[in-house]
Each structure stands twice: as structure tokens, then as C-alpha cells.
Amino acid sequence: MEPAAAGEGSSAGGQEAGTPQRWEEAKTFYDSLTPRKKPKPPKPENAITIAVSSRALFRMEEEQKIYTEQGVEAYVKYQLDHENEPFLPGAAFPFVKALEAVNTQLRELYPDGEELFDIVLMTNNHAQVGVRLINSINHHGIAAATMFSPSKDVKVSESQLRVAFDGDAVLFSDESEQIVKAHGLDMFFEHEKAYENKPLAQGPLKGFLESLGKLQKKFYSKGLRLECPIRTYLVTARSAASSGARALKTLRSWGLETDEALFLAGAPKGPLLEKIRPHIFFDDQMFQVEGAKESGTIAAHVPYGIAQKQRRMAQEKQTKNSK
Image (cartoon, rainbow, N blue to C red; front, side):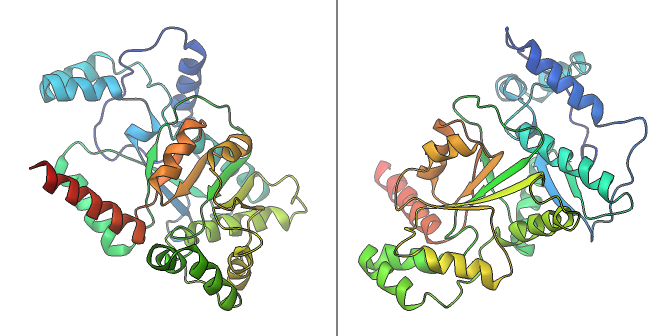
């Protein structure tokens, strides 16, 4: 993991009672960020860069509350007074630990290999930096999502990275979703049947699945398919019988696959995600993100596709009516 981009402190304000195990887990991980013999960092062009904000990786609610209610001076003083206390784990903590576990195994199999996860910790001490980052992300089309903390803690694997993706407007474009919104489900089913053999255009997270697939193949080539520390899932509201074939054929046309493809035919995703227990689940629909959160899943909202346009229009209408 790269060091923080700016001088943000490392306090753990408001440590909860009854969490010594999680505190120790955080401390152990924090200490591991500066190992005695630091592994050689991969070149950016060879690595899969994962940028994580400090407030997603660590729990910083107390610090944010101080900043909001008491101002920047009190915030800085609090950070200095508690700089030797590690933060408690945040929403992204298990995800990052799993990424590091995959890197450890890759380095054992390929000592000189540079196709690794390069995890960058980002901070935003100044608001203008945040604005510039957003503008840069929009300019380059970098896949990004807003991560949400779950409503309850669910234990996830520490040795196998599990990533779950929605289909339309996440792995695929929102082409089919536009038809649903404009013409309803019946027209959608007819359209998908007619265009079953025409691959969908790629969505914002296709590149991430592709990168995960490349790393998986490095384990497969060593005869470690069953022991691979990366597992991927397609979790979609599509129906296997009426519209699933096009999704699977699209992945095949890209030379990609997921370890499991789960077609829920409109059923809620939360209960199934609770069984899968992924480190992160990407979806473009906020109601699916909310359902995932309730099941204890770390969910990330992907701001892409027609669903976002309708959401913005609804918000603007609500704002207009409230004036």
C-alpha cells in the first residue's frame, strides 16, 4: 500500500468498548503497512491500481464530527493528541486485507512478477483537491463507486478475495435497462431474445473484472484453479430463462467469465449476498445497495446509466417542490 497522499493523522477517536479484537486487528494491519523489508512496488503500467479513501478504509466518524462541530484547529489537535492510536477498521478494511492476501500468494508464485494489486490510500485535506480528483476521474473515465458501510458485521474470508458484480450498467452498458425504463419488461424480454447473440457494450466495471481474470489465470497456469484466492460473481436481476443467455454470451465474447453467475429474476439480492459474503458488491441501483447493506454486505454504488438520470430528475423535482 502506498503512503497517504497528504498529512492526515491516524487517530482512533471514540474507541468502542468491547472491540479489543478489532482494535488489535487494525493495529496489526497498520503495522504491516511499513514492513521491515518492503516488497518492491510494481510499475504502474503493470499493476492493478486500487485507490481507497482513508474514510472508507478506517472508521473516522469521531474525527469528522470534531471537524464539523469544532472546526479544523480542534480537528488537527485531536489528531496530534491521538496519533499513536490506530484507527478501527472501516468498510473497505476486509476488502483491502483480501487484496493484500492475493498479492502475498502472487509474490510467492511469481517472485519477479509485477501484475499485482497496487493499493493507494487517498486523503482529502483540502476541498479543492477533492474537486480536482472528481474532475480527473470524469476526464479519464476511471471506474469508481461510492462504498457504503453495512448495517451489521458479517465475517468474510481473509484468504480469498470475493468480488460480486451486477450486470446491466455495471459490467455491461445500460442499453437493456433503457428499454425496461422506456417500454417495460415484456419489451425487454423480446429485445433480449432477438439480440441474444449480439454482445452488450461494456460497462464501467468490465475492466476490473478483466484485470481480476488475468490474475486468476496466473494461478490456473500453476494448476491452482481450485485454490485460486480470487473468486468472482455475477449477481443480476435478469432471469436465467428469458434474458440470462445474452449476459453469459457477452462475457464469453470478451473472453471473460465469472466463477458463478446468479440470475435472480427480480428477487432481492441481499439474502443471496449474505450467503456469498463478498468483500465488495457493485450495483448501479441504490435500492439494491441498501438491500445489500442490510444483509451485512459492503456495497458500492456505481453512478452510471439511465438509473442515475432518473434519480437526479427525481431529486431536482423534490427540491423544486420543497421551495
